[in-house]
Image 1 (spheres, rainbow, N blue to C red):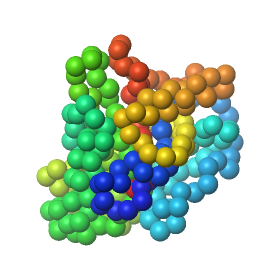
Image 2: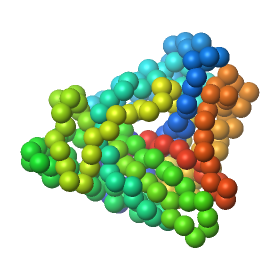
Image 3: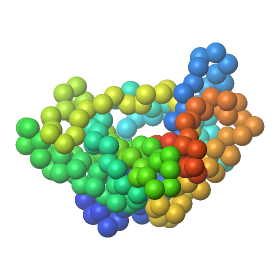
Length: 214
């Protein structure tokens, strides 16, 4: 997520949203990567350290990114029926971490994006599970300060991701629509067969990863 204002949870979802569908790709039959211009650099990357990536293919409605494997801090799974509620709780955990709530009492610079994994419920009365991630700046990549509430993980788990950018507020009403729009835009392209998603039987939103602007 890229967001306007650090630590102001009332602004969750404001600005541009990036829906990132995780793609598991096999080397056999993989489309030949080629450098692409892609979307303009997010404004927050002009004053925050951002997770490095390379655009290898871009079209009007999506781009394919190759993110460098790096260390991120992860919240525990957060069960909730609301994206806004879960992301607010997760962001508060990570914001407290960078403000010094870690074993070294270290103040850590904010970075972008913040990632959110969504694991939708498989029934109408079940909560979904959300995991929120903070990109660890270069200074702490090799050894991030430990925490009782967040743990280091290596991301991404897959080499490539398809990204769709949309404007406005990101909330519970439009995530499924934008994720399905991204999937639709991949139809008929060499990347369609490369996507590997698991989906709940009664869930319109596929398991996906979101980048939110902070």
